[in-house]
Image (tube, rainbow, N blue to C red):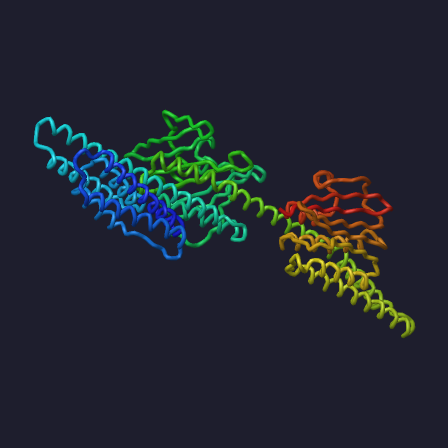
Length: 559
């Protein structure tokens, strides 16, 4: 797995620090374990190597812009020289293990195995030259050789696991990052599934999500070579067997061997392995033409909601293993929450759009369309029975013209309010004051606006929804409440921003104080305002006293 610059720099820092520590340990081992007279050149070599390693550590700590890096070939040369100069096998092993670790963290597997073999042969030869030959010595040489091989391979495994761990962390961050609401649901899922096909070297990735509310199955499929986003297939729940692959509580893999198939898997809740995995359903094999498959469960709201499938239709690609299945499970757990958030935000946006369309439709039907119908009736009356005098005709036409003018202004206002609006914290107070002044002048409604003098620090999206709620609330008061006076308060504390709209109009048809959930259950209250409040995680409270006005309170958390 290829690492990006951040992970590579992290591993390089690990190697730089390990070089200094290992050089110091090797020098101590040489001084402590050597029984023969010390070779001065061996001590000088290790001491110089230690000083260079320390210099690299300090340069990286205090002068990171210099990018001081010791090439790995220097470590090889020191190791080769030391195997000849040292009388201490222990001192050599320290340098040898460091070199293997450095190779493994860089992903040089072949070089690592070659180094283990060369170092083993070199240290045996070195010991054999020092000792006089006896048959009993061969066991000593074999033990040193085996120790060198086992310790080298073990250290290589540690280095490779470190690199693999960083690579997997990098992949989890990458695949989580592509699941963003602003990219759209289909494009986010396409990119995430595309990353899975590359990571597992498979031909196709599939996401199948079951929606019991609408009784449908939504299926996204992405092939390794595809670059074009396609929407999901919408299928009946009767097709679930082909895509959900048996029980959702089972994580499973399946491989076709000749004409038969064999599988592996476990209960994803307990981790208990199954001795025998049920054969893959025939409908699934026909749907994908599958040769091998991995299936992991994705959750929504803590419950199994669907499957992520990795599929190979021929045997030429990577064969799946139990390790692959466990890695896929980890990926699916990681992406489950952000994917669920994208689904929820998309659902909220859809509901907000539907509510907005309903509001516009209702306003057009109750306002402009009714007026146009009335105008048509009046014009038809004038056509069939014109007034007796020109003065009466002028008066009737002037009245009709004034009505057309008023409705034209109302339609222009609606079109203006439907345009995308960008509102920032610094502009919110000015926009609200300007709208209140215009509202007073155009409609003769007394609007008192109180805004906290402190600077509002609210995300732009919340500012936009607050202004839309404020604007829609005043229009609702004008059209439905027949109020003469409205008080609007906007304030913010450490945890939330609140908007209160209080009028002295007719109130709603109900009496009392109700929260959003109660209003939904009773099908009461302004639908569009409720949806806008929900879309930013806020709460709505409505107090009504028929004949004596109403109070609308919106509270939105700012964190």
